[in-house]
Image (cartoon, rainbow, N blue to C red; front, side):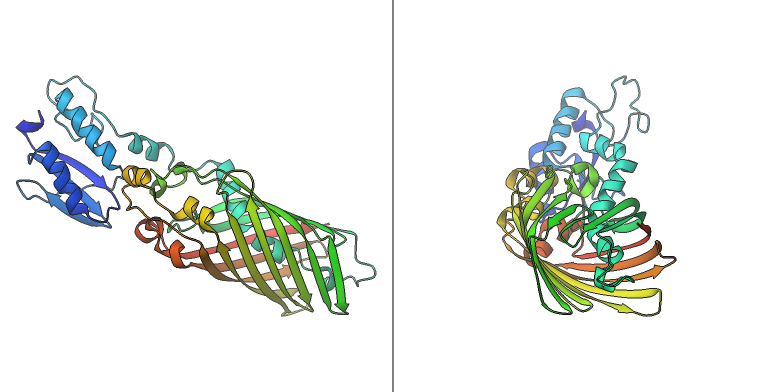
Length: 382
């Protein structure tokens, strides 16, 4: 029984006051229960013997902890409730050891499927790849007069990117790529589709395009990373809005605003981006770009806030994220033309989360405001 010997219960939780959490469990369930709270890699022992117990990191919630202790009291189990029965058998006890649902989830979803990996990579890298692969017609070998109506590029490669926005964990994942432009009127670039309804050419080397756009943003599931357990799922989003783009020679500036209409984050996101291309050699070109984005309350609440219920399930402190400038970033790309149709490219980028996105507990305790990504691609232009 619990009262007859010390039991070890390990909880890796991002709690602002772990000592208070330990004290609460001790008051409710007695001093014979040894609790170790792993808080940001700092193990805090709490037992009447004062022992520090080395423990594997496990993300479980306060609710799960208390439920598990109650189960132990009722069943009379005397082994570590976080370890399988075969690891710590109780003599003469035929009852199977209870295992946390969060532990089962983390074991079954450590590695994403190929389909998930492709979707994760394609959504995070498509715009960067599109800017690299889909050079403006004015920069192509053909002159403006004989430029083709259709500009189609297909390819694939590998991307190094965060698991989710604000994650400190990165993966190298495969992804396919598609870019389609028709007469500079309509385009598809990865998860984004748009139509240039208004087009102006104030000068020979200047062009202005304005029109609607729609883009897809994948969902954020708890299964994607252990750090998300207890925060719930953010469904996929389809953002609909408009954009305006200015091209001057080899430089460009684009502004866009879009709102989710699919019930994902339900928010509004505004983005400003600019860039410039350089020819380093006959077949080698360099691209430099910078971007920043603003998000409203609904977007920030969906991805960065922690409600009271989420706090209880995840162990993170409550937090209310508000609207404002969300991030700023820069990227660099190299593109080499192997033939008239085949090309290879490499890209690298850095994004810094700002304001409430940076201060959110998910980022501050379990993630990082520094977001890195890179990739290598090969593509064919029709």
